[in-house]
Amino acid sequence: MSRRFLRDMKGASAEDICDEMSSYLKFGRSAYVQMLKDILPSSDCVTDGTKDIEEIVNEVTEMILKDQSSCLSKVNFSKSENNYKVRFFL
Image (tube, rainbow, N blue to C red; front, side):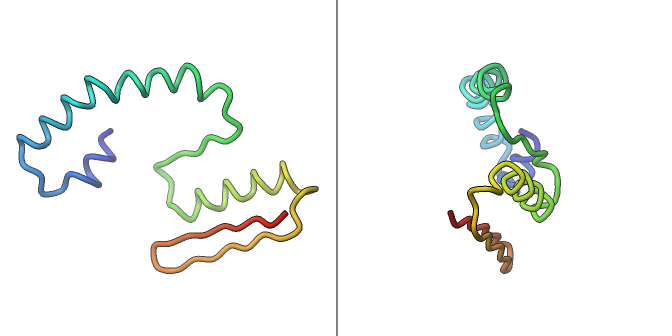
């Protein structure tokens, strides 16, 4: 939550921040806790969102290639300013 606030709430008023925190406690937190119970244990790939984006892309690409190498005929990775694309062709 704190990373999202630092990223999205720069320049927000104290009132806006309080409203957002109240909404998170009412709705977001319970959804997050439920995800930890139901989704995370059965996830095939979990990445650390605090890593650099290029590191995350490389990590996920390696996981996909390792698990799907027999099905993939071509992988295309491209990077432009703040934009990453990974295309997998079957």
